[in-house]
Amino acid sequence: MDGITTVIFDMDGTVLNTLDDLTASVNYVLEKFGMPKRSKEEYRQFFGNGIKYALKCAVPKGTSDEVIEEMLPYFRTHYNEHCLDKTGPYDGILELMKKLKEKGYKMAIVSNKIDSAVKELNERFFSEYVEVAIGEKEGIKRKPAPDTVFAALDELNSKKEEAVYIGDSEVDYQTAVNSEIPCISVLWGFRDKERLIREGATIFADSTEEVFDIIVSQK
Image (tube, helix red, strand yellow):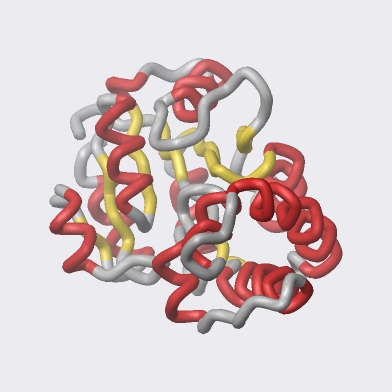
């Protein structure tokens, strides 16, 4: 990770603790469609690859794709109204971003959330530090495709050779691999270390202080 100038963060499970609000919104939709609700710990494994994937994991086996498509607008409406009920930055994230900015690093957030939501959440919580926030939108492939990462690098006028990716899931690790940049996998998010190791991750951080130390040691 020599010559790092640019830090790209995942959103859910990495910089924002969104699990409670996501759980509440999916359970609202399941209940509306007469399906059993799921626990927060189950959802911890479901999230990270977009809401449609999470719904597919949450619904009873055999539920058709047509029904899942029908459920999506109900989720979006409910989540738009309740996405900030309990959501907030993880402990230490704002301090991490502040220290990185003071040292001259450029920062971006990329996510499989809808682009408008990513930009709104970034504006609310991180805009003092994060210059670019990109989510799922037409014409740009979702993670683990590298498209959002490359779009962020373009906006920041950075090269992949000077970037590092920070995420919490196997989707994030694979995104970094596909983008040909190193990945620091944080252990406070939606996945445990054992699963991340199985997926190939090799660099881990238990705290935001550890993330900072790994990054600056490579500058």
